Length: 247
Image (tube, rainbow, N blue to C red; front, top):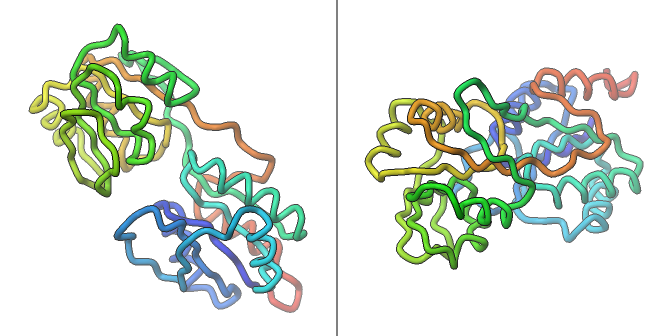
């Protein structure tokens, strides 16, 4: 079976490892190319967009793709929407491999918002310094705010709020390291997206331990494709779509 994995996440890399070791599947991993130095992958990899939904339709047909797994970031809503539209047009089965959302726990002080603009607006009455962990492409709403910012990103951003301190780093993080970072920079408020998963959850534990408010940007609405939270479950879904001869 020819499989296309839309990746760029830990979950995609886990699935790629399973696919690479299974002779039933001929899989390709597609990365958007937004990370300058992506992690090594166990599958043949293409980098760059498809040119919208129609471009993806053309690719699926040209490569005789028989199934697609959308394992992109939970906030990659445009890519996910294109995948759903393209697979519907091309008649290719689609499933989503993602991570579970974070949920507030006892002791958390979360301010839930729907958009990054709303997150910027929510800072009006919250303490300085603001720790931004929203990705380098989501900084524009914060550019004109009269606040001190600590910005953590994987790659250097093209734009920054004036005077922002930048930390270039990639998870996973530990509770102790997150507490130390927040204390060293005098962080008073954390702003993050509800990306879920374990790799970066320690910042929420640290905010809870330090009694800091968290502005949490909720995920975009999910599509209609079946959703899985483990690579093994996505593999089982793929196996169920194998033709009798391939199986």
